[in-house]
Each structure stands twice: as C-alpha cells, then as structure tokens.
Length: 152
Ligand code: CA2
Image (cartoon, rainbow, N blue to C red):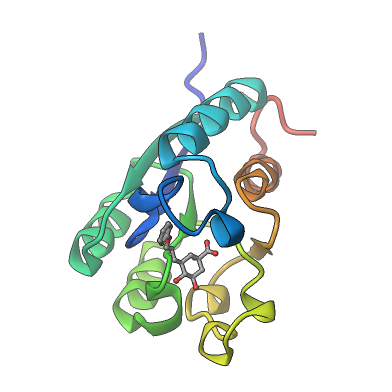
C-alpha cells in the first residue's frame, strides 16, 4: 500500500485540561476524545496523523522544527501561545510546510487580547468557534491542501 501523507497535529498549553473545566467555553470532550475523532477522520481522508500536546513553548518549537521531512502539513491549536509566541511563529515560518490553525472557541468574541494570533499570519487558513468539530473541518482543509487520497 502506498505511503499516506502525514499531518502533525499540535496542541498547546492547558489543552490537556479539556473536559475537566470550562465546558461552556471549550466543550465537554477531552483531548483524548478529540484525538479519537481526528484519527477516524484521518482514516477516512487517507491521512496519517501524529497528535501531540505540550505545555512548553520550546517543546512545541522543537516539534515544529522536526516536522521537516517527516510530515506534509501542520494543524495547530497553539492555545494562548497563538497570541504571544514569536518563537512558534518563527518555527512555523522556517519549516515551510502548509499550516492550518484551529481554535475551539471563537477568539473574536472573547477578550481583545485573544483577537490577534501570530500563528494566523503564517497559516493558510483558520477555523475557530466550532468546538472540537473545528479539528475535523481543519483536517478536511489540510487533506485538500496536500491532495490526500480521500480529500473531497
Ligand atoms: O479556543 C481555543 O482553542 C484556544 O486556543 C484555547 C486556549 C486559549 O488561550 C486561546 O485563546 C483559544 C486555552 C486552552 C485552555 O483550555 C482549557 C481547558 C479546560 C480548562 C481550562 C483551560
């Protein structure tokens, strides 16, 4: 069987707490639930995914750097680092892979400090406000961008 395109799915700080607190903002699913739906979607789309979470900016930067030659695209919810991290922005720029950004909440309906995302300045597109379903929509967008076998 042919090798399938591979997508690195990165989740930033505090997203490991999903499903335990603030369900009115982030929904009641855990990050494991989201990974399971992403794996199902990836199988349908003919993609491999490598799904990870870190609370550490440097670890996310290292994973982005290491994606070169290993993955075909990056899907990222950088959490609060979206709004603050030039280091993650620089790494995404340097790796030169298509980037799709996702947020569970609609960051534009929230506090003004969430309205700007450094990640958005390098992303091919952004999906926000649809809760965990946003990850599915984002994977479908990635599949199209990289011509995955099951892309619509
Ligand atoms: O809406 C999103 O996906 C965010 O990236 C989530 C980040 C937030 O800083 C961004 O502005 C928008 C926060 C993730 C924190 O997740 C928690 C989950 C449960 C309990 C507490 C925090």
